[in-house]
Image (cartoon, rainbow, N blue to C red; front, side, top):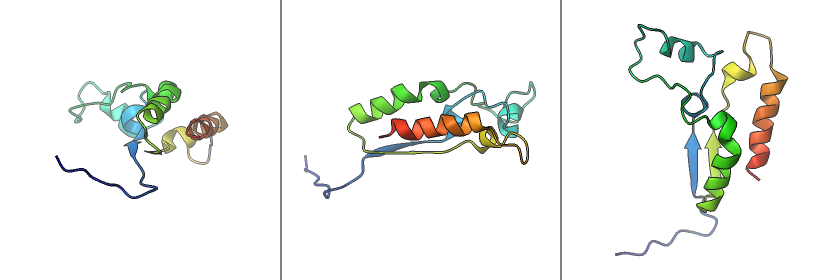
Length: 102
């Protein structure tokens, strides 16, 4: 087996998309449409892996695996649930997620 040598500073990481991993995003039109009885979506996201509540453990697992990079999306429908109305609680949630990455 060949040995691969990665350059110093190489980033090992993972990525997630809020819509796919957070779950229960009632402010998202897509999330709501996925849960209609006669939806066009074959696989609704549901509560996914509940990353919204489990992010501290998930991020700790990434660190245990030796990852040093994590790209995640911020679910805008949570930040701005109605046009011009911003949720400071959700902004704080994502601030805490960022803090957990350090």
